[in-house]
Image (cartoon, rainbow over all chains, first blue to last red; front, top):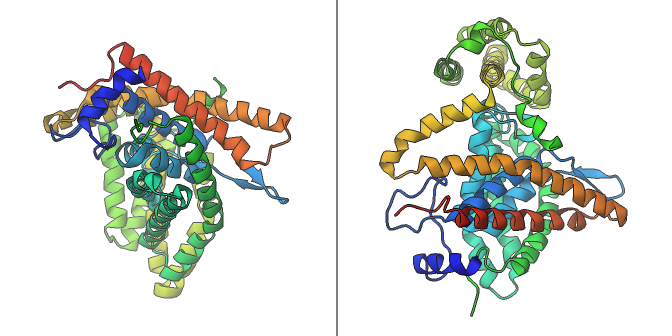
Amino acid sequence: MTQELAPASRTAAPKLRQNGTALGRGGAHASRPRWNAGDLALIAVFAALLAASIAVPGIPVGPLGVPITLQTLAVTLCGLVLGFGRGTAAVGLYVLLGLVGLPIFSGFRAGPAILAGPSAGYIIGFIFGAAVVGALAPWALRRRGRAGWLFAAATVGMLVVHGLGVLGFMAKGMGYWPAVLADAAYYPGDIIKNVLAVAVALSLHRAFPDVLLRRRR
Amino acid sequence: MRGHAHLIAAYHPGNSVVHRAPLRLKAAFLLVVAVVCFAGAGPFAASGALTAVVVLHFAAQLPAARLWKPIRLMLVFLLLIGAYQFWQSGPLTAWRILAGILATVLAANILTATTPVDRLLDGLARLVAPLRRFGADPERFALTVSLMLRSIPFIIGAFDDVRDAARARGLERNLRARTLPVMICTVAYARQTGEALAARGLGEAEE
């Protein structure tokens, strides 16, 4: 099946499956390569992964058993595994369906209420974070020492999410320093998750070499 | 299918006026509340909006616990903002901002609590339909949405299986042993789904 699907994407994009922007609604420009059924399935399943990541209990880590939640891990993986277009679409689909009213935001919150609450900046930031990570991922994967470059990509994405999170706090009337301090509490966990995301992404690219880059002949 | 029940948790069945009101009316109400509360209305307008929303909440016959739950979830944040605004610009501004946030959150919760998920998704499909003019593809979009919904129980199940497997090996606290197998399952599942779709000629772009 992969052999059957591959030629279509090869003619569409010579170097890698660079997929377009926006949500998975097809292209505004006829010249842009369109997503095939395999791409749609990846987008849908990764959006489902984001939704599932808030429904499973956190993993206890360390002697104190501090639970690590998986949502930001899933966001980073969307970028690292799917790349710019499909990764953004997957996170965008998740956010869109959450805003429409499925209880898939953390704490089973749902609907447009999230935009009025404190996490609005993070929710919007997830989309941009995944986009940035996804834009850097194909490039990082081709470099020597790709683990380091993938981690760098994940770090840039994390900074984007946190930056927008702080802006979200401030938009609701919090001062700059209180917002930065409230946000800083999430950095240690997110750095651990980025290390984990890179380890997982490397294994995934080894297990499914053509999921983002075209197989070398 | 133990993972699927949470998808309907937000809806509170009932037969009140609010439940029977058309979706676009409820959405318009939410928009008005949000505009009043965030477009710099005074403290009295914000109080009015909050009162209207609470009245509507009980008109929809929603339990009082539903008023408290969203507040509990963002209590720390509300206290921080309240304290900061009180200190910076006085009690009136602090109240205006807090009342605005509460009114908008509760109004949005009324919308999701009184409308079943399938009607919300229908509303989304209707919202997307006019975009066809700009080259959007509502059928492929709807297909992706339904694929996502049916994949959620599978992935939650994968998390459970992998946790049991890791526990059996004494690796319950090993992050890699808890996540990597789930991700391999997830990507493989997406691959199989994509191949099944392609075999049936579904989801391909029409050119």
